[in-house]
Every structure is written in C-alpha cells, then in structure tokens.
Length: 190
Image (cartoon, rainbow, N blue to C red; front, side, top):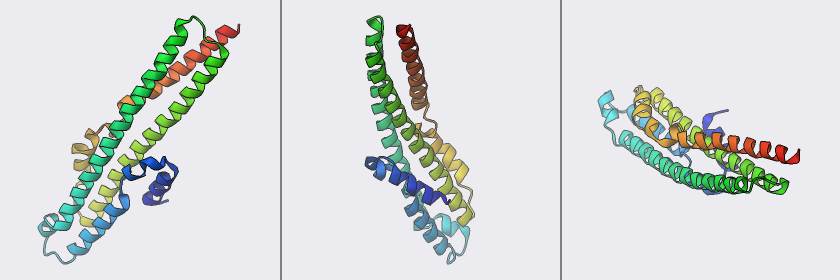
C-alpha cells in the first residue's frame, strides 16, 4: 500500500480531534509536483533551488513540522499529567496496605485504557516521522537534490516526537505498575 493511502487510513481511524494535526502529506506531494513541473522550464539546477515553488515547499514543510511538534508536546504533557494521577492512585491504595479486588480491577482497567492511548500517540509520532522521511525522499527523487538526510538530521530528529523518550518511559512505567497491581492482587487472594 502506498504511504499516503496508509496515512489517510490511519488518520480516519484515529481520534477525530487529532485530524488537523497530522502531516498534510497530500498537499506536500502536490507542492513537489509543482516544483518538478516548473523545473522542466528552468535553465539550471540553481533556478529550481531558488524558485518560489521550492521555497514554498520547504516553508510548508517547516509549518507542518512546527504543527506536529507543538501538538505532540501538548499531548505528551497531558499524558504525563495523567500518568502522575494514576501513579498517585496506586500509591494511595498501596498506603492502605492491601489492594482489594474491586480497586485492583478498576485500576488495571485504567492502566490498559491509558496504555492504549499512549500507543496511539506513539503511532502518531512514528507515522508523522515516516511521513517527513517519505516526502523528502520523494522530493529528492523528483528534483535530483539530496536534502532528506540533512533535513531529517537538522530539523525532524531534533523534535520530541522523533524518538518519544518521555512517552516510552511512561509506557514502561505503566507496564511495571500493572504488574505491581497484579502481584498485590494475587497476594491478597492467598
């Protein structure tokens, strides 16, 4: 399946509130076509690299990067707060000495639900990262330039969504807290 179609499918299946914050791959692809169409009329490569269409492509790419970075950072902050709330609930239950089956069941359900949300955010980050790589690869193929590796290294890789360290730590901590509640529940039953 083509990346653009897979991305569109994922956007349609994801949280509808997130729709405006995904990479606008289709528009960027159209920009590349406009650049390459104009390139046929250019006298040399320098004309292409300084053309208004080429500049507009990279301006749009930068706008998309900023949009995705800001959205991801806001969601990650919201998820960090939610994680702290869940951890606080677990600490409160542990402070009582035991975790009864009803509380354990509710907490485990909350962990699973939150874990799924975190995976969705990770998926958002990965697909947008891939989108930048794919659109730059397409740009380079169509224009003959070699901008992908430099743009990814100097721009995209510097964003928090490119590697998701905080989110991955949250996922790992939730897994551990889930196991902790499981162990406490098993001990309470025996």
